[in-house]
Length: 176
Ligand code: SF4
Ligand code: SF4
Image (cartoon, rainbow, N blue to C red):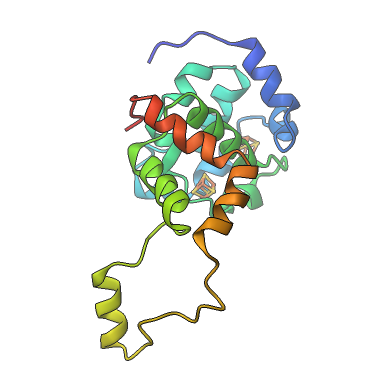
């Protein structure tokens, strides 16, 4: 995908808390060599290349890249990087930028909406209750350990989460 170099984006990334280590990268590819997702995808997912494009300020290429969302945040790359680059922090910042630009994959938007509406990413449904019955577990969870969704929404609203979820409805773009 063609992409222009966005120096403002690169500088912003370098100055953002958690991604200061970006400039330490010397492109040795140890991260990619240790990444289980890279192995599983035959190299289609490549953390070194994401770091390279971050260093080059290739904002549009990065926030439109669906492979950005393949990382499982297992932290193996962080632990193996000889330069101490905190790749997962950088990936989180990139994903947050993609969300703000309306580029998050639909499945993540749906999950976020479910967290807002139900307080959990996977709401209770008949199939879950059936499995609980099969395993002889209580069907009703103890009300003392279940926080009412209204309370969770107050917390989520204070973090700006509601605003993000609402923006999904305003912005029809689908990052998938
Ligand atoms: S392991 Fe570290 S230094 Fe090497 S390419 Fe990956 S991020 Fe850069
Ligand atoms: S955190 Fe992501 S990029 Fe790093 S090794 Fe795990 S899957 Fe790969």
